[in-house]
Image 1 (tube, rainbow, N blue to C red):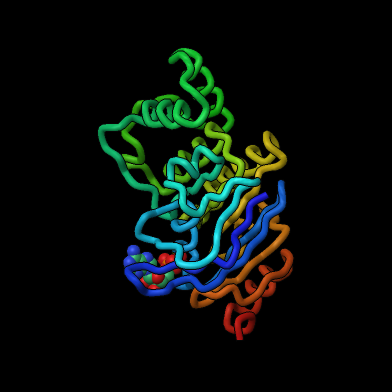
Image 2: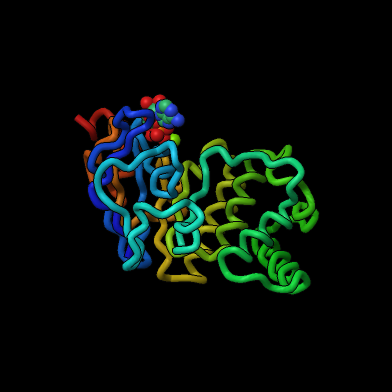
Length: 243
Ligand code: ADP
Ligand code: MG
């Protein structure tokens, strides 16, 4: 369904990720773990098509579509969704307009009242105040509010593959549960959804159980296993797993 084939990534001619292979069948949940600076975010950016993260070997395919040379918006249209580790603030662009435009670009424009109804209903499932729709995107949002907006996008935009980069970082337990609920809700609505959780810690994996865990170290995929690998990392730390 989603295949990362032999991907290597350069930033400013420096190789950051080396020949990573991950194959995701429909409906599977993957965790990508690894110490800070191992290349997890770089991999996420490159998968989404960030122009600074240059793919030097390999390919990415979603269903039968080769995404490798497509622009980020074309990858989004093919069904790829990336939630950033640090969502950007866009003052002056309301959440409502941002989501209306994104939705229209992916699924076709619908009348504003119909969109508003869809938006409010989706906000309700995440316990979000409708007033948030009229604030600037992430403008003055707390960490938890930012991650909640990421979940709102996920539920509204209905991707086929979702990559969540450190969605759990800096969240208290209540916010973490909201995020986990959002992910599980997206999976319920679309059982074929491929979920890739990039995370440092095992914490979120207690709520969203992975089928596969991959460990990246210095840009290389050094271990793959099932959910018990994440538990091993939690107990022993990365050093024991990597060396
Ligand atoms: P992780 O997400 O696993 O913590 P990153 O992908 O953020 O790791 O970083 C991997 C390596 O790539 C680090 O050495 C980091 O300094 C470098 N790096 C990441 N992004 C950039 C960038 N935009 N410019 C230069 N170096 C970068
Ligand atoms: Mg990172």
